[in-house]
Length: 235
Image (cartoon, rainbow, N blue to C red; front, side, top):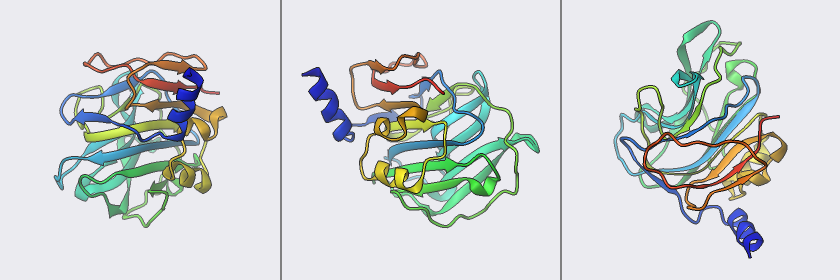
C-alpha cells in the first residue's frame, strides 16, 4: 500500500501545495547546487495582486545564511527573474528578467536552466515555454556562493517572502534540457527527471516525511509541517 501511495504521489504531483503567508513562512534545505551548470523548478501561484513584487521562489545564500548568491523570484512588474552574483562584481546580483508576466491566482510552472557559461546562457521557462527577455548581462564567471538553499524567502533578513502557493520545488546539478522542462510543466514529478543529478525535490503539499536516498533536510524553525522530501545527495 505504501508503494502504491508513492506511485500515486509521483503520478499526481499537484494534489496540494504549501500556502506561504508572505511575511514569515520559509523552508530551508541544507543543500546547495554546484556553481557550474544547474537548474531550478517549481509550481507557483501568488495570492497578492501587487505590481511591486520582489518575492523569492528559491534562493541560495552565499555562505551559510548570509546574503544571496542566486535566486529565482517574481520581480518588478510581476516578471519572472533569475539573479546570481558573478566574479566581476561579487557584491551585486546580475538579473535576467522575462518579458512575460505572471497573473494573480494563476498556477504556473516556472524553471530556470543554466549551462555554467555566459549569463546569456541563463534560460527561464513559464509553463514549459521560453520567451523573450528584458535584459541580458554580459558577465561570464560565476561568483562564489555555496550556502543554504531556501524556498519562499531568504534567511539573512527573513524578507522577500512568497505570498501564496509553492509546490514541488526542485534543484539539479546539471542544465536540464527543453524536453525535461516540458515534461515537468506537463506534470512529471521532479524525482522522475534526471534523478542522478537531482539535489532535492519536495512535495510541500504532503504532511508525512519520507527521505529517499539519504541526506539531511532541515526547516528554518518556523511552524511548518513535515513534508515528503525526495532527496538525493549531490554527485
